[in-house]
Image (tube, rainbow, N blue to C red):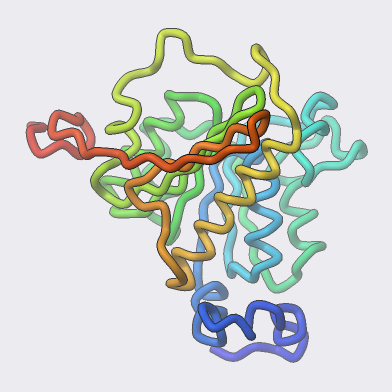
Length: 248
């Protein structure tokens, strides 16, 4: 797979990295990534993956741009209010990097439709705040043997994890928490979305290029108010109904 002169200049700062180089950049160009949720986390993740040269990005989100989104969903502009998120985001990604192919899926992912979208890509990023969607995406990733990069934010904190088979996301969150919160109810500082969304993109780039150690089986937790991070290991649950060894 060759690069145009424009691509060589565009990716020059990555090509000189020992962990990426020409081979890693070729892997990025050949890769396809599904981003579930074009919101606070999906927005910065999509921008950085497009800028990095990921060959194909699929955006899945059923919503339209609202004025309240602009505080943290940095891919959008005031002129995008009222437009479908995936279409507005795709236009901005194409403007950023014309070498990237962007597909739009203006749908709500659930058990009945997550499978084909997941199966059609190499890697999945989930930045939604809906546990039913998270569970459906995780189940599809396990079924189709796709790595899942999961991120979440709320108030001043965020977390990122990478799930490759076992343990899966359901090992971390077996059931929908009874006190589950969303950004619309508890609030969120916009910059935390940029931090965690960028971390998700960084993990994706590492996974695709084969650079460093991904957060596989680990969860990175960032407390912005305390300016502290910690990483915890996620154990595989043998009783997990998605990936457990004891499931029927």
